[in-house]
Length: 331
Image 1 (cartoon, rainbow, N blue to C red):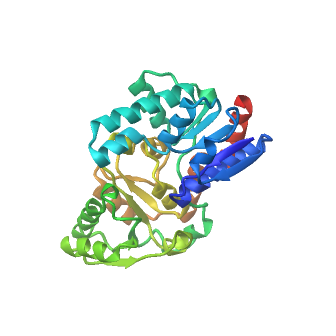
Image 2: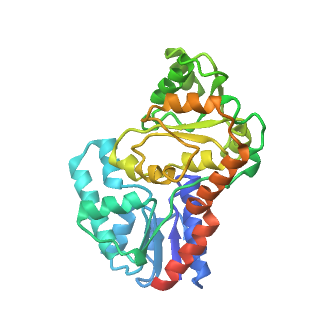
Image 3: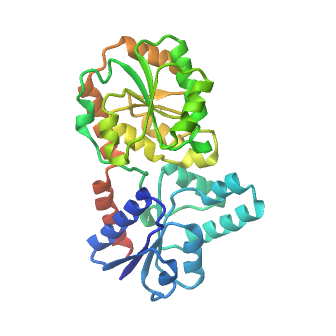
């Protein structure tokens, strides 16, 4: 018997918890789901409990639960410190994290960089047989998004998501403005966000001329992005970003957008090293964009590369199969 505790804080988290549940079912375990953590604390001590929060995982292990599976979405102590600037809170969460890593039954991480972070921070050697790497993703691969003939002829740059400070929208606008000022032909900036008034203020502040503001639900993004060529994902150089695999990356790859990314996204930088159609914002990105605008980009070549990368790193069905094999060896 297993109990999966959902966070009820987003589609991505719920889908990943569902995926873990399906993997457990694949090895013959009966799975129940709940959004009420107190239900987990009433379960049998030998029951498998799946959680995605450090505090919940620590409470279970401290109360004698022997089979706790934790999905580490991010490095919570560092995320907490960025939000609250509280050192006591940071150290408490770090203590909890270390206990979980040492005593939990199985760990699911979002990147190899995250594993390296934990091993360095806590002086641990994480057992690969009791852990699995599963990058974040939030959409299926959409082959039809690669088909528009003008997709890679026009220089349409896209940004999707919120305007939260850590998303670095202002820096993204600055980057696009550089492109516009450099005279890159047929350039336009498409911004898909629910915070359209705020986005417009920033665009006007920096004098962006060619832009489009819109908002669509995530299920309609592939269609909306089908004519876009590039996707921005600019981040600040912090430990949180080094280990992250933002869902935006999988969205761009799934919809055929050439990522313009920050090198500090170490987890994606490793993936990018296997790619041709990708632009690093930190390495003379204007020259790369200018060069791409002069060359004829073959839609089929982009499709083949992105399919290979997506299947290798982001395909949820393959992750489920691989996770089943790992769990079968542990449970």
